[in-house]
Amino acid sequence: MPQPAMKASNPGRPRLLPTSAADETFAGITYHLDGELVPVLTVEVKPDQPVYFEHHIMLWKNPTVTIGMKAMKGAFKRMMAGLQIFVTEARGDGMIAFSRDGVGHIVPIHLDRGQEVHVREHQFLAATKHIEYTFQRVKGFSNMLLGATGFFIDKFHCTEGDGIVWLHGYGNVFEKTLADGEQIEIEPGGWLYKDASVKMETNLQKISAGIFATGLGFVTNRFTGPGRIGLQSMYMHMPTEE
Image 1 (cartoon, rainbow, N blue to C red):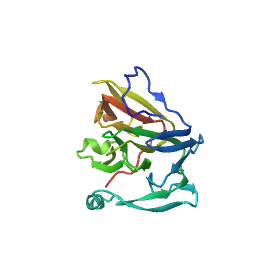
Image 2 (cartoon, helix red, strand yellow):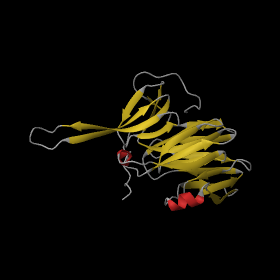
Image 3 (tube, rainbow, N blue to C red):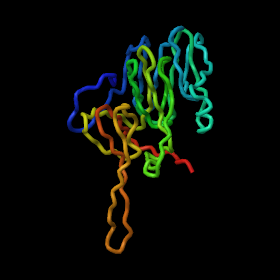
Image 4 (tube, helix red, strand yellow):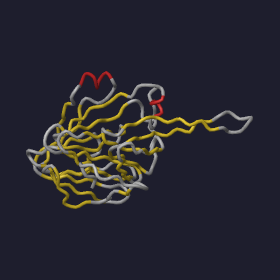
C-alpha cells in the first residue's frame, strides 16, 4: 500500500501498486481489498471510528452499521461551486463494503497528521474521520485542459492523528516518487493523485501537421517533485464545465 512518508526517488518507470489487501490496519482501522476486475473495499467500522464515503457506492453492510449524513466543511462555498455539501457516513460496529460501477483499482492513501493529498475529482471513494475533505478551484485557460475534469481538484488533509483516503483509479494504478526538481509529464486523463508538495502545470506543445495543414497541440500535465504522483492506466476525461 502507498506509505505516508516520502521514499527515495525511483528512477525509471512508475511501479504498479498492490491490487489486494487482507487485514491491513492503519489509523485504527482494518480494511480489505478484494477482486481484480471491479474491486471491493471492505472496512471494519468501530463505534469511535466512523468512515464517510461517496453516495451510491455501498455494496453491502452488517445490520449493526448505521448510515447517516456528514456535513462538509465550507458548505456555503461548496454549494456556490455546485459541489455536494453532505457525504454519507457509516457508524457502528461491523463491516461495510464499497464498490464503484467501473473496471479499476482501489488505492489506499495513508496519511500522517498534517499531510495532504490532491486528487482528481470524482475519484474519491471513502475516508476516515480525521481526513478533512475540501477542494481547489483551478483557474486560468491553460488549466481548463487539466484532465478534462472541470475546474476542481479534491484536497484531503489529515487534521489530527492518522487517516486513510481510499481512491478508485480506472484500469490499474501506478505510483512514482519524484525527487526534488524531478519531473514527469502525464497524459491529462492519466493522473490520479499527487502529494501537496508536487507542483502541477499544463504543458502545451505545438505540433506541425505539414506545410499545408493547421498546427496541432499536444497537451500533457507536467509534475515537479518532490513527492508522490499516482497514475491510472485507463484515461478518464470527465465533461468540462461550460
